[in-house]
Amino acid sequence: MENTASQNTTLNSNTSRFFIMVDDAIESGNLVQALRLILSNFSKFPDPAPLRERVAQTLAKKGRKQDAIHILDLVARHYANAGHPSRSLAAIKQIEALQGPTHVLEDHFSTLYSIKSTYLIDEPSDFKEIPNPVEELDLNAKEPQVNEQELVNLALERASQNHGILTVPPINGLPPMPLLSLLPFEALRRVIKAMDYELVLGAQTLLKPEDTSEELIWTVSANLLMRHEDEYWRIPSCALLGLNGFGSVAVPNEFMVVSTRSAEILRLTKEQIEELDRELGDFNNRLATLRRHALSERLMSSHPLFTSLGNTERRELMEQFIGVHVDEGIMPIKQNGSSPGLFILLDGQADVVRNDDNWEITIATLEPGEVFGEIGLVSNMPSTSGVVTSSPCVLLFLGKDQFEQYALKYPPVAKYAAQLASERIRESDESLSAEDLVEID
Image (cartoon, rainbow, N blue to C red; front, side):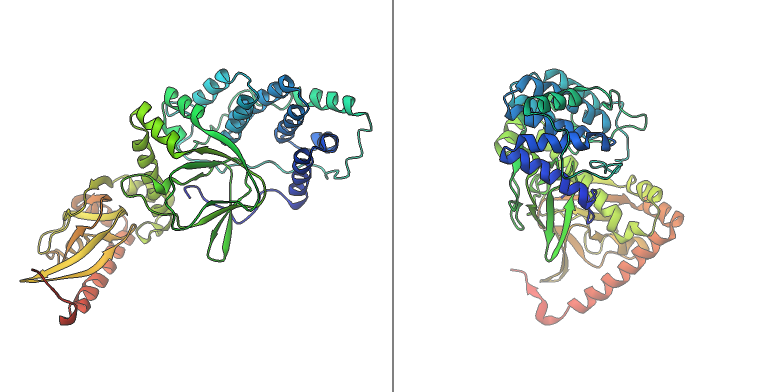
């Protein structure tokens, strides 16, 4: 999970019930009921794009494909301009399924969301779900009392109006879309073509704990839940799932992801990802880059080295670290040597080891998020133990001079490093018992 999940639903219960009723009516083929519900409540939403989309789905079921394509074109442009990229792509994919033209929409989307876009903002904004209505909804849908053909024509007329369709991005910018906004224009268009749009049935499991994902999934609707032990979180729209399964140090999923009811997703399969990497040359590298960004964001929000600082201070400190890729068996800290700086293990594993003549002990195994190199920085003592990577790793490194500079500027950083060094020295001494020693052959 690479975007924050929320325990709160955005829609109030009455609004959620309304959309469930409309979707169930469309799915069951009760199109008259669906259109009555939509028309009875169209003007009550400040942004009726979700209702336009459902009118298009209804028209498509009635064989009015060109009318459906016209409405979905409006919806796709509106969502792209409004900062709802996954919903825009879902509309584009629905046009594609109806065999309508999509190249102009793909160009428009790629202009807004590719890495060179002038519209993207540095800080992702809170994604706004479907807005709640401004008036009480009519769930009885008794109006308008006209025959089916007139009902279809009214719905088409209402959904085809340009009123309320956003034609340009807002002046405060657009949020990036995970992974896609790291791609240049042509690469983004190629990825859009490759991805699939799917409706996932209720109570379906998309990701299982301990499984390593081989595909990427973007959420469109907010009908997916992330489960960990006995707790559930609702996953918002435009979240990217499965990223932990990629890179040289891929790890299994931590959580189960299930659908609460029919949910819309965008998917790149393993085969599609392999084909994209062959075509683009660096697609897997971009996956690894995004994964490191996501891990870094998680570190800044939860690691004790950063949590005592304000948001601006956290980013300033994180920007001083450099990323280092190391293979298995590399020793960034050598026993009895001086510490070159502070390391944070971003990905992979490393062992803390101590040698004494013909004896060696593994004191601890470091996991992602753990810090090392601090003892030599705060005590000017030689390192009491060595650190050797036990898998390919990604490290964040802050040189000794930079550490000293920021330790003076931000005392909580120096305090954290000193406390950690004290704990490590104590734990190391306690671990060195004769029964724990392993003879080196």
